[in-house]
Amino acid sequence: MSVSVSTAAVLAGLAVWILSQGPSRLRPAGSRLRLLRGGVPPFGAVVASAAVVGGTAMLLDGTSLALALIVVGVATALVAGWRRARDRAAAVQRADRVVEVCESLAGELRAGQPPVRALEHAVAVWPELAPAAAAARLGGDVPAAIRRLGTLPGAGGLAEVASAWQVSSASGATMAVALARVADSARRRRATARLVASELASAQATARMVAVLPVAVLGMGTGLGGDPWGFLLTTPGGLVCLGGGAGLGLAGLGWIERIAHQAVDP
Image (cartoon, rainbow, N blue to C red; front, side, top):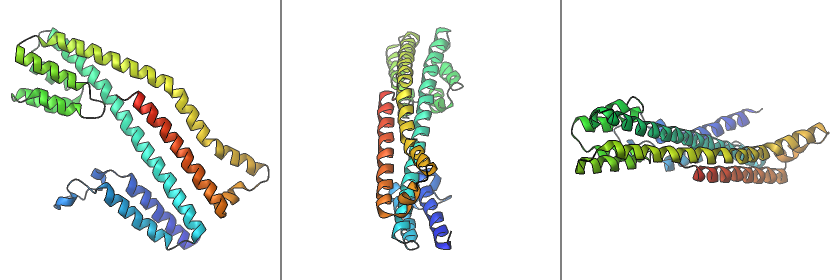
């Protein structure tokens, strides 16, 4: 492999890494610039990646450049898909914690614990509830603190907890019954979401298997004495087929994952 191609591969990998990093990962340590306090914006990451790809273009001929762009595009899509899957898994875990928090609060209140103490005990179940517990200890706006937590992915069920807390605080009614109903409702929603996810798992697995079938077919063609890889990687027509096939395959996978995510959105 020539020096130019090696350098281009490194630059392409750098472009993928830039696009895969979140704003907090790219924030300069100790930066005082107002523009960079929230981290590098997505536009900045795209511009940086474009500069890297532009540097790559200066080192490669047309065929190699097209192949490098296809590799960068596929790698970026795969990294983005992995990050979305990781975020969805975190949202599902958070939704399960919300159910446990509701059950914990209802149990503590039934046992005669004051709401503030029950909320402090719930922090052991879900540490992200600490700001709401702190607001309760300091006499702050507990429903508002709980609603802020409810904006996190997967924590939408906390809106009902906040409403129950607010109504009980304003009317003096017991909170145990309201939170028990909230816990029961959240538990049923999670059970339904798990059922839907299990039904969709086979369709998702089939889609992933279909996506890798072309690679298996190419391997079979090579074993039969053909040269499909040479056609795909070194000829203009092959690169068009490779780029189009990879794009359509990734679009199909993304479409299936999006449908599944919308069906089981916690």
